[in-house]
Length: 163
Image (cartoon, rainbow, N blue to C red; front, top):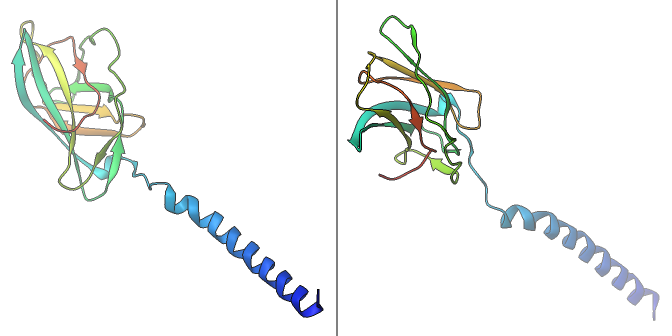
């Protein structure tokens, strides 16, 4: 083999190695989807409204709407604290059991997520005016006006989309 041919093969091998390395580095970035970050308090506008009732329960829909970001939520909110018009926390028992984790849901402009808060219809109702809660998988808290008097025990679903 001539020295010219040998140099050409060595050069070709070097180029192939460099290009192969570059392709190997680029391939995972192209193949793996880019996931949305976990939603934080600044990413969400929270509202609560009466949803429906049945079987002795009252149901409220707490909606998490995007403030412009695309982010994800998964699981159920924790540390639900209802307060009265003076800001005093109201004490309610929690329903037994833990809500399901459920799949991660994406919140984006025009695509909100929500949870359902359940309480009993009968019992000593307290005039709640505000709800504060900790976002799922987070330490960040959000708050919203609460539309009605409620009684315990309180239950909450995992975050979901749709109706």
